[in-house]
Each structure stands twice: as C-alpha cells, then as structure tokens.
Picture 1 (cartoon, chains in turn red, purple):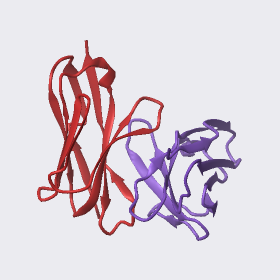
Picture 2 (cartoon, helix red, strand yellow; picture 1 turned 90 degrees about the horizontal axis):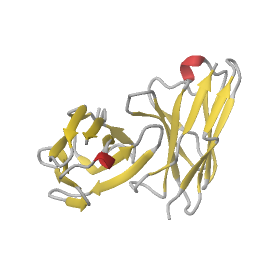
Picture 3 (cartoon, chains in turn blue, brown; picture 1 turned 120 degrees about the vertical axis):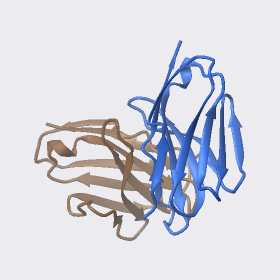
Length: 112
Length: 115
C-alpha cells in the first residue's frame, strides 16, 4: 500500500521568511503532484514532477523531486500572507492505475 | 483548457433522501473520473474510480450500494448518495483524466450537508 507523509502538518511563519515542506512516499512512483487548497475550495494544481531531479518554480514556490530518496520538497521563499493555505502532495504510484494517494496536508499560515 | 465542473456546489438534504452530484469535463473527454471525499481538516480520500462505460471500482470500505457512480459518457460522471445520513455530510470532489496515467483535473467540489 502506497503511503504518503507530509511534514510539518502545521506551519506558522512570518512574512519574509523561508521554509520547506517535505513529502515522503513509500513506493516507486510515476509522478508527484503539489496542490494548494484554500478554505472551502477545491484543489489548485501547483506542480507536476515527473522524474528524478526535477525542479519547478513558480513565484515564491519551488518544488523538487528525489525519486531515490522518495522525497519531494516544496520550498517557500520570502513568504507573503497570500500564501496562507493548505498544501497537499499526492503520488501516482506505478501500479496505482492513475489513482492518487494524498499526503495529510500542511496547513500554512503566514503572519504579517 | 481542462476545466471540470460540478453541480450542485452546495446541497442540503434531509436524512434518508438521495442526492445526485454531477461531474463534467467541459473541454476534454475524460476516460477516467475519480470521486474523492474530504472531511473537515482532513486530506482527500479516494472513494472510487470510474471509467466510461464500465462499472466503477470502489476503494476498500466504500459501500458501492450507498454511493452509486455512473459514468455514462466521456464528459459526465454522477455520484448518487443514497439514503443519506448526517455522517455522509462532507465535501465531495471529482477529478477527470483524459487518459491512463494522465494528469487529473479537479472540479470545484460539492458540499453536502445532511440534516
């Protein structure tokens, strides 16, 4: 059974600071996704990482993937209040038939 | 492109009634659609996977007779919560994929409240 673990689950940070969210998964994977969810809303796709060493950046967010370590990171640079949301990673396992397994989510609060 | 809609966005119903939620892919053909449920402050849990023209595959612990899924066309899947109870109150999110191992596109979700 594929397991996906995120840490931390809760993150409170000051504006302007940097931080990293970690996503570990238990089996080999075809692809890894990062999503953002605002309260009461559905998921917004942030990144899709397809291969070992993949790095993608959008604004203050940068995601990377290490398939050997089965680890992905979402790095936040110079956080701003608008980044406050819950962030999920999800993994599409090699034998899952496109079924996604989600991490528990990281609730990020950026304080002014 | 790749827009998925859900209807209704919110629904309140009485205990014992049935509720139907529609999921549509607006600008692509979705060979596979997925239904997720999310309780407050929790992650998304996959309920079932449906492929057009065939029976849905349910995850362990999900009652197929309670959560009826129909994927009648390449752009529409429906989830019917039968004999709803208060514990079925949740946020139901669908996603659609244009093909095997292709990216899933998520709908805006349907919030169900059973009184």
